[in-house]
Image (cartoon, rainbow, N blue to C red; front, side, top):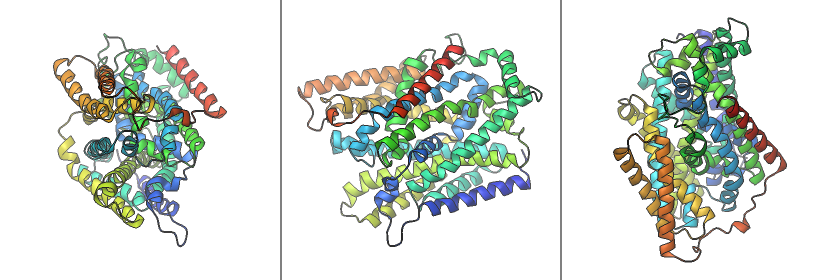
Length: 521
């Protein structure tokens, strides 16, 4: 794919403009020096529209755009369950978890676990998240992003890695979360426009210029098997999406871990002006989630008709990008860069937040000044990105499916994390030892099941390990104590009421999903 001079000019304008915007939105009033609340929590001032847009920008990256389009090519619309079930998860997180986190006035997820359990749980989970964010999430997004740009442009992987790292750090390192969240608005606009444009051109091409509705109807007729939302056991991709489990099984555990207890996602809501603003932002994010399959899955399904001889499914989205004319192609390519860079900047900011607030300040330098905390945060962000650049290709280059590496590794710990938070919030008798044992059991049980029950679908394994870890945590807690834990959360002190607009939007999202699954069951 060859980018024209106009395309390159648009991409250059976007990159320089975003860096300038990042510095502009993160400027401080004269005489005010940026402190830790400004840098890590955006001064607790984020409005709902910034929260919702930033949630999606942090989530959607190369592995979603390229990977989910490839999954759409291979197995069809069923992969959209990851997006659509996430919409309902966001609503539940907004109603039942965010009120608790905001009430506790926390910066990080490990900090909450110390308030609920003890410092051991905070330290263990902080070290775990730092390891996962640097070695798995940051590294994989950087590598898959570089791979996507390499596939489209032919630039060397190393050059792509360095470009993405420098670009994402350049616009976010000075301003912290405020720069990340407010520039994400531009990123999401680009992402939605670029994705919808590729979908439009793909469907219109299928219809020979007769329009997208005609193209969609033709697609339904040509490949009806690609529109099964619930896969049957005889489907060759059943192991990836095991039937009804996408609605009632392990996907819920994966979604709650990601959308409810994941630092680089929840940090946006923690930085809201207030609870109502956080909840409005989460509803906005849930609505955008309904739209995502149009952007990342439909082009993949369209490629089945337009390019049926692709060597690899992940070539589907780049192949459909070839339909975009010069000039507009620069915008679509900028949208791809936007998706990657926003995820990278979100992760580096969360890495710096956890290290600074959960390890450096409490354990290394309790008397650190606000200025010192900001300096440490910036330094850690640069260090994390440098490590990711250095290890990305050696670590992930040997994997045929780097996305599978992410799923397998994080899936070992996901069930235990959800058990810790769910029982910690809603069951007063949960003890610190129970939380630690559940976390350790999650990895151990996942490994045992993977080795001795390999035919068990990945998603079902996560659901089973979650139930086992919950049972273990309950048994340990009951053996240790007969009464509430001293740090138990008083739910009577938490306001779980939501606004009329939140409730109406929630009903609308649920009804839309019922309609979609009823149509393509």
